Length: 296
Image 1 (cartoon, helix red, strand yellow):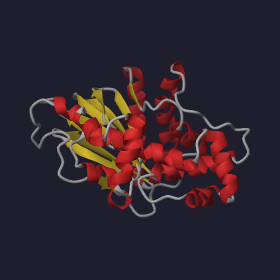
Image 2 (tube, one colour):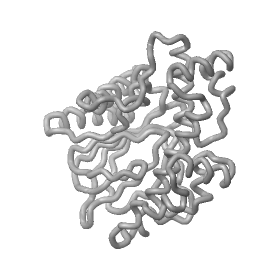
Image 3 (cartoon, helix red, strand yellow):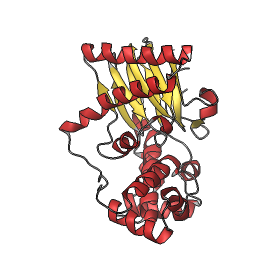
Image 4 (tube, one colour):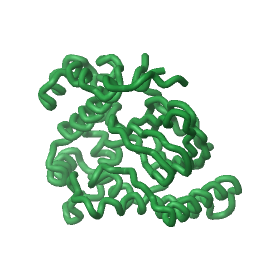
């Protein structure tokens, strides 16, 4: 199967498929010898590479994988993973839902530099691997306070990822904590980033924020610098652009996978933003320069 060559929309992995009922996390040790096809999921996924080499393609951008690579994908991302020829990737993979994150961490993950990948030195790698082992033991044994132990381990690993941003200026506006409605808007933004591919109205977001629609709209514009509809449309367009760049999916499928209801509207707003039609944008995509097909 050729990388990025799919005859249907990338698969969406559901929480109930990979987590036990009434539990918000799970952990796996995997050995990957072939392509993990383009997909997304309704939970967070954080992977640690302990051996092998390969490539991680997150939202159309390629990143090198090797021992010590640590990366996070969120419900707003899509990605694929493939090992180098003749190599096997050894992956520690923890998945979790957003209820495992305190509000401060949710916000830190949502704003700022979009990079969610780092390379760990041996000392830090050993420490992070022990945190993964702790999560694995707690998942297996189900002792009192299991949820708290796992939550603490996740927070410590995520902070390792977040601290790499300190050397790079933020590229996305952070919420102003002094702004009225800050807490409500922050909650609404988590909802928007997780569900922007689905039908979503200002009323839905205002309800999540627990604010009257008119006041929510005012607070949203003040904190993000954008109207609700423009913010939502830009999220959908960015997702569509990444998917166009990364795959040869039909334009109609990408349109609907990105949350647009009609192809005509999608093509019009896409060209207005990127100065190219979706088809022209796709024709310059990453997959055009792919090497020989990778067999599963």
